[in-house]
Amino acid sequence: MPDLSTIIKAYDVRGVVPDEWDEAVARRIGAAFAELVHTESGAAAVVTAHDMRDSSVPLSRAFAEGVLSRGLDVLEAGLGSTDLLYFASGSLGVPGAMFTASHNPARYNGIKLCRAGATPVGQDSGLATIRAWAERDAYDRVPDRTASVSGRDLLAGYGAHLRSLVDLSTVRPLRVVVDAGNGMGGHTVPVVLDGLPLEVLPLYFELDGSFPNHEANPLDPANLVDLQAEVRRTGADLGLAFDGDADRVFVVDERGEPVSPSAVTALVAVRELATGRGTTVIHNLITSRAVPEIVREHGGTPVRTRVGHSFIKAEMARTDAVFGGEHSAHYYFRDFWRADTGMLAAMHVLAALGEQSRPLSELTAGYTRYAASGEVNSTVADAAGRTAAVREAFEAEGAAFDELDGLTVDLPDGSWFNLRASNTEPLLRLNVEAPDEARMTSLRDRVLEMVRA
Image 1: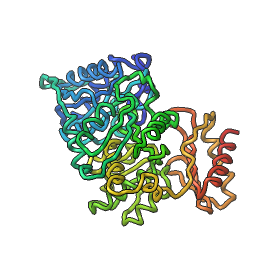
Image 2: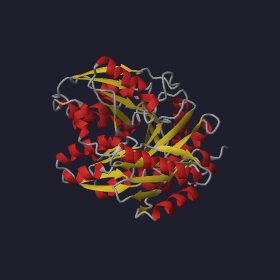
Image 3: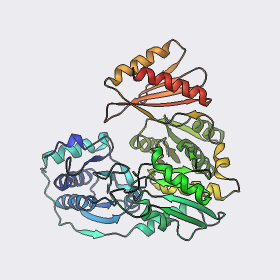
Image 4: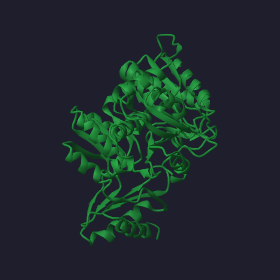
């Protein structure tokens, strides 16, 4: 039996197949998850979906065997994006399991778990229990029913639900290049955007878990190059890049220039606030300071959180927030069970562009106020020691500090940076923002010099 501590992470299950986990492990995790949700809430069924990786179907079927062994039915949604699984969990009112390793390379796979209504399951909210029970693989409760498996075709319902939240039927005609990266966007985009005044130019829509064209990780600028070139070549109005499980979306404008996730967060926040159905907007501490500024300017209340979907979703539930955004291009909607959906965020961008006549670069310029470094990673042996040294260096300069998530340093000139240790790797992650590019670059380089000394 593999050591499950290597694959059960802070937010999900993730590891190399079959080296770190296999169908036998999936079966145990399925049984443990079923026991957890039945014990907590009396759940009688679990819905599953999977991405296009070669290992996803065998793993999901083994997981289903574990669920069935605990007397819970399995509803199989089949091929889908992660946000389709959230739609399934929310609309059917049952716990869910999505088989995907998101943007990781082909040899990886994983499981994203949620309770009924797409409520997240994380290390502190169920994953630790699932690990313990899966390792033990023994239960006191004797199931009192024979469970069954049935299929559910939810793709059309998922698309209809998204179209009910953002009306694109009357926007001006738009040409949009979509890079699915051979991931699940190639399965969902044609259904969701069908029949709308959009000319969709597809890149890498063929489902292929070996990712033959580039990694399905648009956070890496190298994986946006093809999209940028195609937008420029075709004269498209914008480009969209989805990650492997299509729960994140990255945007490039008509020039092929990336639009920062912070600008997208601000744009969508303004649209959601304009509906008058809520005033609270969640943003994590790595997003641009422009986000809370713009939220306040439009009558909203910004709430700052730690990085990570479990923190965002918990704070959304606590505050009844209408929307939440992260620097990593995860976007969360109250109308979507507080879950993250790249497709719905993309539809908001398309609507904002198509409801007026300016190009996207001009539209988003008003949401971009500062110069940002993006996330810069450094491999370090002593993350705590390096962080302490950075803090000591800035204490004499009138800086303000907080430790909500790592170390955030606010400087008197309006510049700031955050230094966070990775949960899973010997890395320090640096994000810097400043009033202009020159100040950002000098501050970034100074902190990196101290971190990497």
